[in-house]
Length: 429
Ligand code: GLU
Image (cartoon, rainbow, N blue to C red; front, side):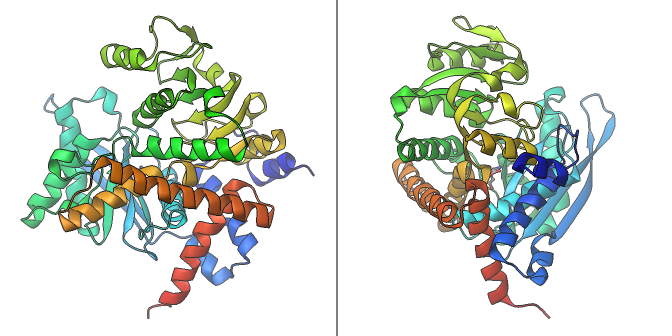
């Protein structure tokens, strides 16, 4: 049986968008198999320490009360407080949040920062809500999960459709409820409220560090790179800016509304101005509009999925035409998609490595907030690069030694660190 057939047998054949939790579990089991982990340890690690489900009732601007489903999933705190973002999206499900929480655990362990893993989400569509409605959802949700979060307990951060403004409301709500300002209760805050310089662009900065390392590893040249970016939110747009500054050609980008391409290279600063005005990438002069799904099939050296999970799957992986895949999103490649890419020889830089810059700078922000002592942006970016370099070279070495994909190697490192912590902690009672 080929690897692709095996992957198909392990997942539901015919399913385009694999359940994220199944994807995360299969990735974990592959690493656990390689490490020869006992069933006792696995039973702890594949479970979720705490799963919180809340009904977030808020008053809409119309006066009507509406109730949204909210979740906070805490996967593991074996290595430190739970840590992970909060997303607002209509597609949020308990299984997605669980998968994302588990990935946070391995990600924090891989970059060796003293956090566990968690994730939160509210099932809602922020594009259909006013700022004050989003504020009320945020404050109500924060209050409801408040007993289980805090600087030493569980520290939220931005994720899909949440940003520094949402983090400010979390900070304010949490702080008002305990009677004093607690800078360490959330990361991704604005700098004016005790956030850190460099957090906004941190995920993209980390991605560009990883791209630079991979290019060197593959003996390619940054200047020759054609980059395609799926998703033009915080991660995708900042990645475009950084890559353009590095002298690479960003030739295609997409957002929820559509995709544009210019094989000579997009004028990224002009594109940013266009998006600030138009609210979308389409309509940008000097680029051709294409079908959104065709973007992933453009011939390029680097493809960066920076949107939602499951983007690269059994339906399209065969037609992906890149040398390097760098996962800005969490879980953008399904099990079958991954096997197809491996067969094609694509150099896949997995999410828990590639996009770890965000949580790494969250860690810096948390440390600075607890000390009320703040660093320069250069200090932040230098320390980030050191961490990304260490994680990249460890992953490459582990892959070579064990004849593993970079994804399984990254998981092996993360899972091993968490297993070590669990064994040293012992079991209470
Ligand atoms: N949401 C980001 C991630 O998936 C950042 C999480 C954080 O900073 O805690 O890694």
